[in-house]
Amino acid sequence: AHSRTRDRAQVGRVRGRTEDGRVGVRVDRGASPLGNPYVVRGERERLAACHAYRRLLGATLAGGGPEDPEQVGLLGRLAGFGGEVRVWDWEGARMEVERLREMARRGVLLELKCHCAPRPCHGETVRDLL
Image (cartoon, rainbow, N blue to C red):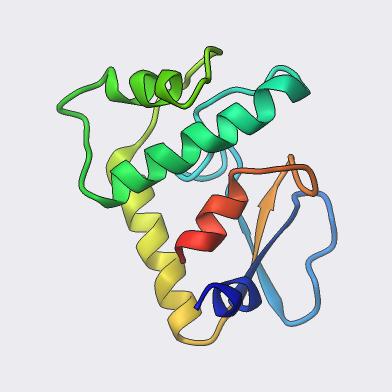
């Protein structure tokens, strides 16, 4: 199933050309509820931010929510991320993942667009969870 997910969705750069036959969907901060709230200020923070995002999106899809507003920062710290944390829209993220999953189920080929790509990017987590 993992390779099928990679076939249905890939990660690309926001300013890059969307591959023929794919629908570009932005997942960057400010453009999407799936934007990574863990702000990367340098390359050394990138992998920790991606790991923190994987934990956060997993908790979100498992039903985590705003009853504990500190949970976003806590999940980041547990993943080794000590940088700036932005606001996270729990319900918006759940709804956007469901929308993208439905598109993929219908056979739509997605290209998840972020400024990070092709460097390690939270978009890889989104792709893997579709």
